[in-house]
Amino acid sequence: MRLSTETMIARLRETGDGDTLGGRIWRARDAANLSVTELADRLGVRCETVAAWERDRAEPRTNRLFMLAGVLGVTPAWLIAGIGRAPDDDAAVGSTEALRDQLDLVKKLHAQAGEAIAALEAELDRIHRTIRPRR
Image (cartoon, rainbow, N blue to C red; front, side, top):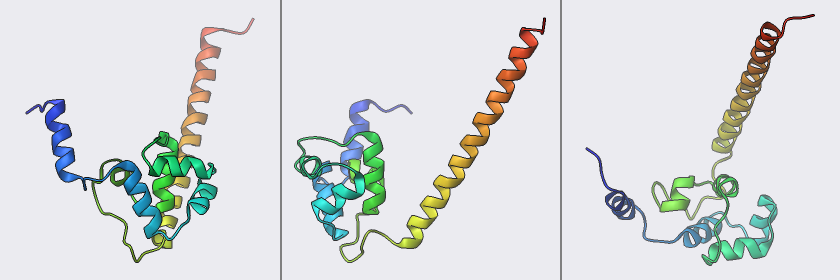
């Protein structure tokens, strides 16, 4: 069964929390007990940038959105659409263990990407030698 775009958007709105991206960024930052300055420093952006995000005057780029979610201990889906678990007001930036698990996963994926790149380079070199025989 295919659903129209309008139907999908309506369903997403029903499952969300009714807040805006900026509102969710503010709520997650507040729950993490971070100031605008602290969050900006961790993300490598200016305070004005974070303030603009929280006021819905600008939106973070995709890479910053994922960094933001990691720093705030929430999922990108929650930041974007309010889908999933909201941050705990009592919890700081998420559990250290969960962040360590995420870091380990990223390191593992990075290593696998490096191996895949090396294998592709070797295959390209092999093909290049086959197509262009030595003179």
